[in-house]
Amino acid sequence: MLGALAILPNPQVQYSARGTTHVIRLEVPSLFEYRDLAMRMVASACRLVDVRKTDGPRPKRDGQFTAQVMSAFGEAFNNVVLHSYGAEGGHLQIEVELAKDALTIRIMDFGKTFDIHSVPTPNLDDLPESGLGIFIIRSCMDIVTYSPGTPNVMSMTKYIGNQ
Image 1 (cartoon, rainbow, N blue to C red):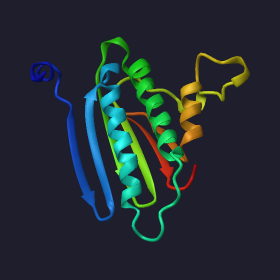
Image 2 (image 1 turned 45 degrees about the vertical axis):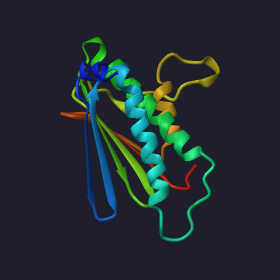
Image 3 (image 1 turned 135 degrees about the vertical axis):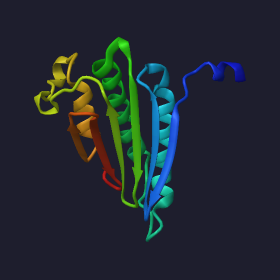
Image 4 (image 1 turned 60 degrees about the horizontal axis):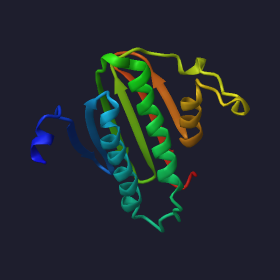
């Protein structure tokens, strides 16, 4: 089993803390094979947000916080793999910032850019083929921004208790 791990490119994981804010970083190839690893990191971070909320009572959680964050992150990851790099691949950097009242995910890539404001709200009655991912991301998260450049950065924030 160990031999199978040795042939994979090395994902990079880092952790840092400043005051009450903690940041977890992961760098993986922009390939669907690494989606599960990235999703597990984000799911673990969602659990940490709840654990870190120590001042006062913790908000009652019904799983919606994690479900919404995971849905948004999964769509964002897919969009980078499919649209930013395509078949040639590249690297994807993920930062998860844990604060007492929120979780912010930043996905950074060096591939093709796009104009997030040009993505129309889909007509859900027609089950569109395009634009549904951005719609899901915006629906699940409280703040979504995209900055094209070197790197392209999509930032998504979800506040605790905002489901």
